Length: 583
Image 1: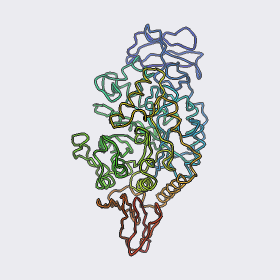
Image 2: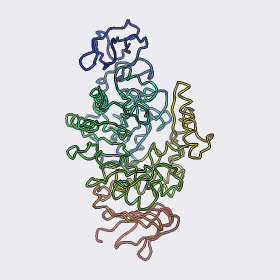
Image 3: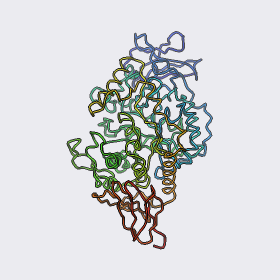
Image 4: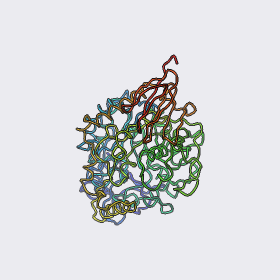
């Protein structure tokens, strides 16, 4: 016996299509717009779809847990209780202790599946990673893509391995003491295969986002829309044992409700964690520079545990790369910006932004730096470049090592992007796979048009729809222990070990953090207890005065030396200095 239920207030008549049987009339709608029917001989493995009114097209279930034949085909009943978990005693390490590693399942390994990704988990453990953050794995159109155009948010992507494959991956991560953070997209649906509005008002034309009509968080019917997304979040945590969620582009949540959707979500996640006996985390992406996102609900915040810190990335990147491109980078470029991002998180904390042409943000007061993630690469900052260059491709090995030295010793929770730790030679490009020729054309031409405006030759911009663009983005694991790749890997491992074994480097209290710079020679000094990090981001050597009893703990290159009470730093170099206990 299986009960089929669907929220479809827009339907006047609804029928259930099971396999090749005659359609069954469904009961409904009830007062909230739900329809249902129970079928005696249906259960796990049964294929089903819905027929709406007189439309002869069978549509898949918006809450489908399994789409084995893609976004346009029938859904399949999936038994969430059948998988045999082995992580009964698993508890995730706290986010404050995390070293995050963002990865894309399709390009992380040659095969591009959950099972093949498991083969590289020992490598991540040896590196010192504590949390893997997966780019979206929900069902989207085609055989390859970034995952942000998902249309079946409850169904793990079948080409990756489907529901059971994802459970095997999470279970294997927990067996290796790795926590799993999943990127989820609640701000829009993808342009292909989204049938939600056939059934109900999931979207509203009253508001618009960069992707079109906004998700309906506060219009008629929004109670069930909010329930849809909250249930999705709880499913990943309960049924897939995921340890936390990263919420994509939360600044595009248009919600004027008295209780914001994010506040509702954080409260429900906290309750389910208390029930299960696990601590789940929520990480927001937002460009609003508003600490409300990570303030506790008791302090009238949204209750997110952390958010990405783009101002830190932009401040550091614009010092390393002299031609970062137009747009938001125009607001950054000085050593003072980097210092402010390190000490106060937001550079734009209520001051005027030239890029936006208005005041932007508000100050971060009284919050731990552990509410913010620090990084110099992520999928956006690499993949949204015209040819997907990684940092080392742009600025060279020495500068990339300095950047990672700052990221891994700064007060924020550090995050790496897959391959960054060994200066991967492969780019990370934007790729997609649309079956409709018109959609393929629009995506390809749009990509070229966007970057032509920045002076790029259109012929040099990879076609997102070309399978070769996807293949080129895969990590080349054979190079990890070769030449500069090995050198970078050892540098990152050493920095992670330093962070994990040095108490002051895990202090999130920004009141204990001291940082200073010299704009003229582009030198930076961060002081964290007995440890100081001295960096030269310029093109000429600089000298930094030593404190009594200080020694060099580690350095990014040869040529860093102590003499006459000073440390000499060659161009683009970094040294970690440590005072002895006695001093």
